[in-house]
Amino acid sequence: HESPNLHIYELKEDFWMKFQIQKVQTLAATFNSWIMFSTGFESYIATVATDKITIFVQSGVQYEVMQVLSTSNGLQSFDGILAVHVKSCRGEVVLMTGFGKHLVGMVFDPQSSSPGFKVALKGSLSVDVTSWKNGFAYIDSSNNLAVVILPTSSGAEKFIVQAHLVEVKDPVELQTQGIIKAVDDIKDEYNRQKDIITAAENLLYYSVASHSDIHANITIT
Image 1 (cartoon, rainbow, N blue to C red):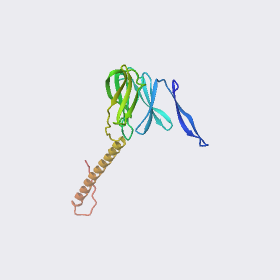
Image 2 (cartoon, rainbow, N blue to C red; image 1 turned 30 degrees about the vertical axis):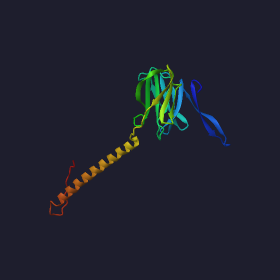
Image 3 (cartoon, one colour; image 1 turned 120 degrees about the horizontal axis):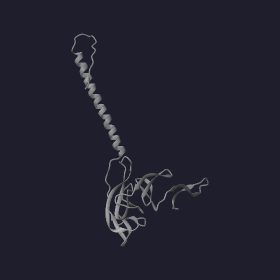
Image 4 (tube, rainbow, N blue to C red; image 1 turned 90 degrees about the vertical axis):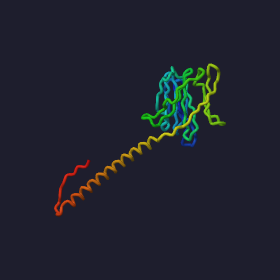
């Protein structure tokens, strides 16, 4: 981080099989702090400015803006954000930030029309947090609980984050199920109309004794 820019480097192997660190991108923006985290097998960077938090998602070797979070939910400004990991196979995280005693927690919502981090928790702490960017989070190996340490007006405070995962349907699976249902409905309607035509043909066939062709208009409803 070289104010006001964030430089991203990659360890690359050259023709002579030597590894070198090369700059691949510069995120030019004014911000006070930043974090890097992974969730759902994707890598993210969040930059924190006083009035907004910008979340970038990795696409290849570049990072692209995925979402911009503005001050709201009782927060007058931002100075930092924490990624609190929840024990899961996908490495889910809860993004936590706040102002004073106010606290906001956000989780990733893959089912939204515009997938991104949505507010899942709003609350208040018993003390004023003096700096979110100087806080840190970790998983306590003894009980697998997420722990957050924050500097407050009363000194460093320890907070326990209790979160659990809720199973949601895969959006692709939901779309596939909708397509399958539509196809099944079309098949049912086709079979219904086929049965009506067959019944009409049988009725006309047995209604006359000659072998003359009979033409008729049949309306299926």
